Image (cartoon, rainbow over all chains, first blue to last red; front, side):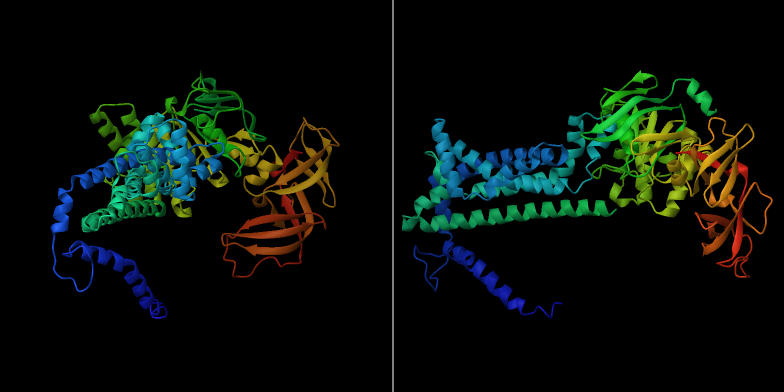
Length: 267
Length: 368
C-alpha cells in the first residue's frame, strides 16, 4: 500500500511547504530587526513584541476581540446544543427545514450576511457596537456548534432519556445527569471552535463594528503605517499560536469523545 | 397460586378497552388484559403486532388513543412515566454510558433522594442478585452483552417496582447465553415475586418462562392462556402456526355429537376429533395436528389413519422429518424422534406408501 502511493509523498511535501512558508515568513518577519523584510535577515530582535505589548490601542483591540469571542461562542454553544437536542431527540415538525435554516450561514457569503445584518440593525435603530459584532459572530458560529454537538449526540442510543424517566427522573434531572454530561466534551469542542471563528473574523466585524475595533479590524487599519507593521506581525504570530492550540484541543476533545462513544457501541 | 386465584384479587396491571392509533395506522385494537399479581406474563407475537406498543403504553412512553390502564386498581393512564411505579428493561439495555455500574444502578434511588447508606446497601444487594459484585466501578462499555443485560435488570429491580416491564431483553444475546438467562430470569422472578410483563417474538422463550402468554397479531390479542393450553389448544390458525409447527387440513364438519366430531377433508377422507358441541354440521373447519403427534404406521389401530406417499425425508439430528402427501392432496410433516442410531438403516424410503396415524386427543378443530 505505502509503496504503491509513494509518489504522493513529494506531492504532500510541496503542499505542506506552500501552506506553511507564509507562516514561517510571518514568524521571521516578527523577529527581524527592520521595517522592511528582505533576505538575508540583518539581525534578530524581540523589540516588536515589546512594542506591541506597550501599544495600548492594540491591546484594547485584542481585549475587545476576546470579549466578543467569549460572548458569541457561549451564545452559539448554548443555542447549538439546544438545537441539536431538539432536532435529534424530539419529534419536531419541520425538522428538515429547521436544520437547513440553522446551517444556512455556512453557505451564505459573509459579505452578504454582513450587509444584511447591517441593514437589519439600522432598520431597528440598533447602534453598532461590540454587541452587534457579537450577534453576527454567534450567527455564523451556530452551524459549527450545532453540527459538532449533533455528531456526538447521534453516537448514543436514543432511549437513554426514556430510561432515565422510567427510573423516576424529570426531564430537567435527565438533562443534568444524563444528556449534558454525555455531550459535555462536544460542547467544549464546539465552544473552542466558535471562539476561534469569532476571534479572527474580519468581514462581518468590519460591517458591524462601532467605535471600538476588534483585533482584525484594528490590524487592517494599521496596514497603512509601515513602521507599526512589524508589531502587527508579532501579534499575528501570537494569535496564530493560540488559535492553532485551541483548534488542536477542540479536535482532541472531539476525538476522545467519539472514540469512547464508538467503543460503547461496539461493547 | 393458580391463575384464577390471581385474578380474583386486584390485578397488578389492567388494560380496559385500550387502543393506540398512529395517524392512519392502528398499532393496538381495542384490548382488554388483566395481569395478575406476581405473574410472569408474556406478550408474544411477530414484529409489528403491537406488543412493544402495549408495553410502552404501560410504561407511559406512549399515550393510549382510547381506554384506561390501571396499576393495582388505580387509573394511571394520564400519569407521566417518571411517576409510575413500573420499571423497564430495554432491548438495547439503555445503560448510561458515562456512569459507572454503581451509578447506573443507583440512579433511580438517587432520583428519589434516598439516604446514601441505603442506596449503597440496595445497589450492592441488587448487583449481588444478578451476580455482578465487584464490577461497581466499571463503565458499561467494559462489560459483555450478558453482563450489561444483568446491570439493566438490577437497575430496574433495585427500585422494587410494582411491575417490571421487559422489552425483548435477551434479543441481543447469543443462543446459548439466551437459554441460560431464560431460566435465570424465571428463577429471579420467583425469588423477588414481582409481576413481570415480558415482550418477545420467540415462542420457545415465551413457553419456557411464562405463567401465561398473550399471543398478539396485527394489533389484536388472539389468545391469553397458560403455555400448555396455548400449545395444546390454540384458538386460531395463526396461534397454532406461530407457536410450534402445525399441519393444517381444511375440511367441513359432517357430524358433531357429545362424543366426537367428524370432519370430511377433500381427498383425505373422514377424520375424527374430540367433541365440539358448539360447532354445527356443515360449517368449514380446519383440522390442526402437531407433527410430533403423527406416526408413520404400517397399518395402525389409531383413531385417524390416512394413506399417503412419502415424498421427502429430512434428517435433523435428534429428529427425522417425513413429508407425506395424503391421498394426492395436502402434504403434512411427521416428526419422529431418532431413538436408535440412524446410520444402521432407515425404516422408510422416499416414494413408498405409508399410513399417517394420530389420536383424537391430538386433533384440534379450528373455526376459520
